[in-house]
Length: 178
Image (cartoon, rainbow, N blue to C red; front, side, top):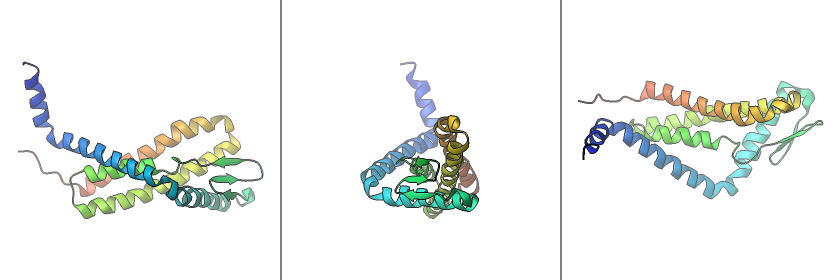
């Protein structure tokens, strides 16, 4: 058939890219499956402690007059509360970045260091996102949904993408195709 030859040529010329894409999907879905299977056990640590409590402490450092408090996944002040839901702890961004790094051809330890550094970068970015959402809800509540759904989530994905690009430029050496 005439159309199979161009497909074969394309596949043969893009083997590395196809391999990366398939490994990325595999690692991402395995990571998601692992995360969802232990989510009930990790939520108290990931959502309550590492995100809600830390964000509240940072808010209180930035604006001590807020006097925020935390009850499980809720950050409150005298004026209002904001709830950090499961899925808002940055795990999806971390899983996307980890899948991309593990799928990319580089040494295993470079991958491990990349995932660890990337986790810290996304975690810090997610804290910034939560804090920004707190202040958005307080000062511009009509902008909250836009900030949360469109800007905040896009921000985390862009941070992960930028980290991945920088990481592979420094540590990922691809051999030229002969």
